[in-house]
Length: 166
Image (tube, rainbow, N blue to C red; front, side):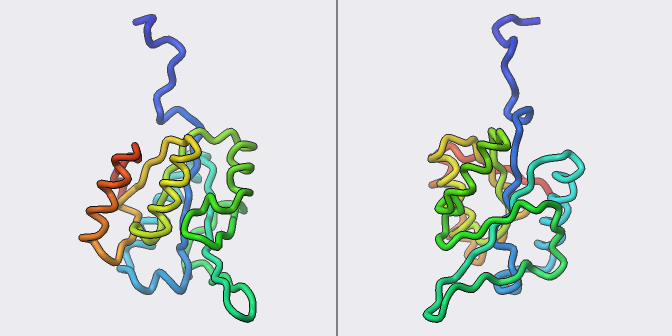
């Protein structure tokens, strides 16, 4: 055994969290039906592997108050870890950072919608806080694929990893 690598953990061995971003009725109608199936498969795998699963819901500020749309019909809800956000970056909700620290989460994988907006902003926000971040592009919806090509380049330069599962 090479002693230079003793005690080092592979990134896959770190306690991680799966972030499910904005998979809500008002958004999912804009994406292909199979996206929800892929998201649910990834959630089931995370649940079976006892990963921390965190759901993020977008809350809109309206003149007469705030409104949070329901989760998409058929979305697998495998944990009670549900947080709302009012900005594109999920980490604008400071409760999320405190929760991840309490759970000793060391890395984050993000799935959901939209890859050019809230998913990208949340990935950048997590990276700014020092988390290794991966985006599972098989479980991310985008309405503008040519823009997503540019978004991936920008995020890659920040050290965000792209993988495709499902």
